Length: 173
Ligand code: IMP
Image (cartoon, rainbow, N blue to C red):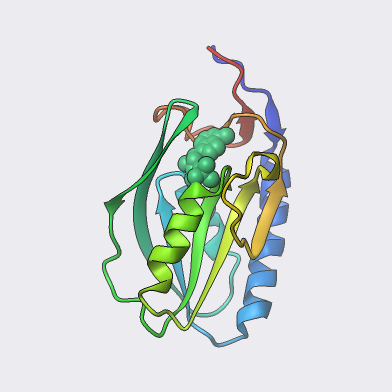
């Protein structure tokens, strides 16, 4: 069995996500439609819990990116799935699983700004600030975590462990 001690258990995750949902709606205002862009694949479990904690109008889009192999970033961001609809004039909220070096998010912010949304903000479930090499703005953060490779709740190691219901520290098989 893999050793993945829990860093954030299910109750801790859900409590914070409910708070984030409220904070987000307050910032956008009651009736503003929010276009939530889930960054595939790691964010989808967070996204599905988060949107159920945001009252009012929400639209969903997905963007596929890949920058990691194993536990190390390749340093190169690739778009593997683009948006289906234009975001011009929309209030966009990028939903990320984790910000590590910041490379992926910097790339995404630049790429999305060019498409002229009415506003662009980011929510990340997890933030590893000690690993940052590309400074990037993140408007909403669930949890700051230490420099450890984490899996579960959508986060993977080569496609494994996404289905763990909690966020755990990967310590080898
Ligand atoms: P960055 O470009 O270095 O900020 O990395 C962002 C992406 O790398 C995230 O969206 C994740 O897919 C992946 N990633 C970074 N750290 C971890 C981790 O600890 N566990 C799983 N995936 C990670």
